Image (cartoon, rainbow, N blue to C red; front, side, top):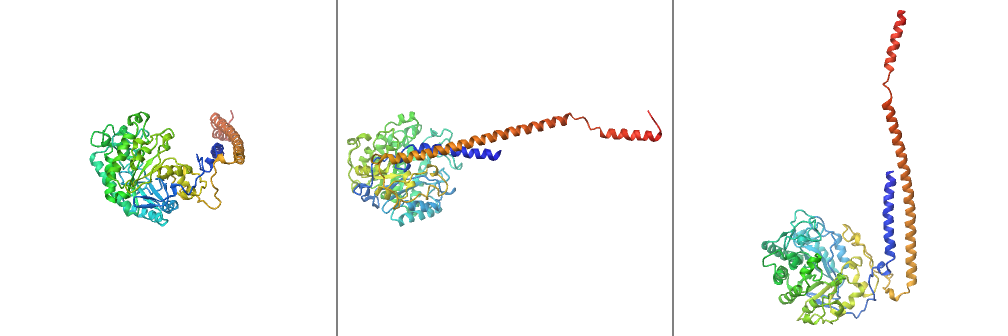
Length: 519
């Protein structure tokens, strides 16, 4: 019976997978070939996307950037990048292209994820050096993203204390550790950690560093009023005070490795909070506008500012043009704050306004060229860079994309990490659905759906047969148990064995006969 139960469990799992396949196949071919939401062809050789761009000390040859992607494949402990990370980054390097590394802890106390890398020990430096050498060998560039979790530390490593700008817990992790409010001494120690990590990154061969000031991590926690509202010192209250830690951290890194090797990531449109707290934070223009103005004023040669574009959330209608204008020397009040009105044609960065903007957030292959043509930005890609290690080549030549497997994003091995194929002579060009004859596509999808449904039907039949076998086995077991029960009852009712008594009576009778006695 145990074998039948196991087989049934496996079959039920296979049925579920096939049901998901049926649902998947009935979406669109754009989803199947990973060109989700691509409405137009791409691969215009005249696009600004393929024009050279000076970014800090780097001379890029195109503007397709690999955004930072947490992959959780470092050793645990001590946060040393694995050997397969060398191949992973080398695969995605391109001549004159920029890679931003996965988020990398500035110190042990700034961490908390046991399989994320760090950049603060000799062992980590040595491992990263192999990676940066591999990227440089292909003519590429690579920045190290410097990371501190703050209250986003979920307690994977119990030896690391969770801290934040206040002691308010993470609203999305109510069962997580309660953070301790950082003291001024804690803040100053973290700033020293940023300095040390930046120095280690340059020693490891990185071309520069990007401070992670976005997505609800430590620097971002100080900016947001909903998180910082219970604090009462020079790092809280006013917009200027809440920006102090971030600006001080940028200064620490810039003073250590130089402005032209320093950058920062911000996410003005990503609340990482509850609905109630969104209202408390208000619109982003004042807080993040102040941050951008001070970055430009204090660090005029900053390499780039990475902005998580509101495209990442379809419910947000804002445009990042307001912040882009600050770095291009344009009055931000003259550009649209809404996506619908975002039509400003931005000039190229120049000697007077050299800081580049890197935008990321759900961009598709067909978005990149028109976005760059209007803004001149670097365009960062995440998930489709995972599944397409040759992404710049595919976009440049208009080729279809490999689909990504979300289940392997944080797997511990090479699956979904270094095993995605490169394009070859058989890789077709992408053609939007609107430009194709839908009949062959529909016929192909119907055929696949029918096959999947037939397989589901056969599996259901097999499951019913197994259920009948299980039922029969259960009935037989019940009969056997009843038989055993009846036998036990008979044994309990059987009289005490009289054999010894009978033998004794026979011996007495024999003795009496010998003596001639009778009764």
